[in-house]
Image 1 (cartoon, rainbow, N blue to C red):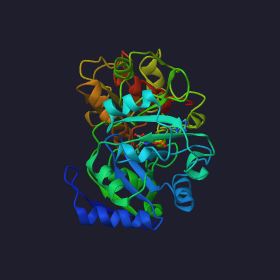
Image 2 (cartoon, protein in one colour):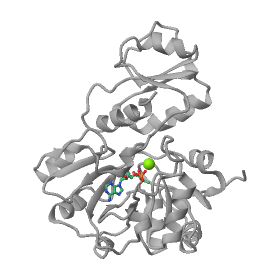
Image 3 (tube, rainbow, N blue to C red):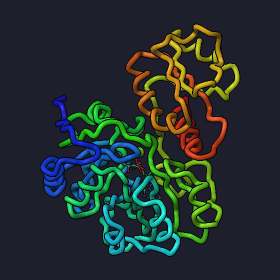
Image 4 (cartoon, rainbow, N blue to C red):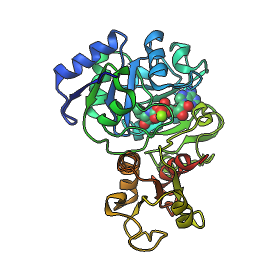
Length: 333
Ligand code: TXA
Ligand code: MG
């Protein structure tokens, strides 16, 4: 397979001519992978059905799983979605940032993007490269995470290239993403706010901002189509250290046991079990989130037989997203 084109771009002051080149690819109906503060996105012109369809083909994504629309200006949402009072407040407080809002759709966006739903997911990323690309393009960019369907989300350009190869026309390389897990997805179409996916924006902060409880569904609700599919599956088994007997179970799989967890966590096996190169320690829950997907890909590349991951002790803050992603990475094994 031929290599996709990776172009380095400044993550804090994106070069205008590089951004323009990428915008031109999008205008012509091509696919551009770009950094957001959460993970890399695989972008297409959201108003061009044949461009949006390419996303599903490139990722191997089921077509009934709708895409998020990315905006660079709040006012651009108005023609596309009904912005409720609560949505307005949340946008003021958390945009740009890792919060995606599901709102009633105004029916402008092609069904290839919305999977035929009468709701639409909107978000304004805070990454300068994402913002300037959307602004330059002149239309909202439809973008899922830029991984092959079912793989861990990419937090660096090389991971996009590894997964998608020549199926993407251009990859903007803005280095490692800072949040590391995807945006929080919040359904605002009903009387109660419903968490469809925990992510970079903690639920507690949303509740504080609005003064109302968010209905927790324990991951993507039945209403979020993405939940029907397998997610974040590493190519090696991932075990959670909350499960009993984890050392014996890991050892039964292979001798190259990898471990990831936070500083101070006690790995559930005797000292010396894990080779240094297979041990990844995070200094905070924010860093666990930031490094989780990268760590999984790194440990795969270092040929671990099995990964044992510390279960975050608390679902507070970004810990809820880390718990969710670990659970999905370990399920159906
Ligand atoms: O951080 C992120 O959100 C990244 C970056 C690139 O922005 N994007 C991302 O997109 O994670 P994706 O497609 O991998 O995940 C979007 C999730 C899916 O689970 C999808 O089912 C859900 O959002 N979703 C999209 N539109 C929806 C809708 N109208 N109603 C319910 N869920 C929706
Ligand atoms: Mg995804």
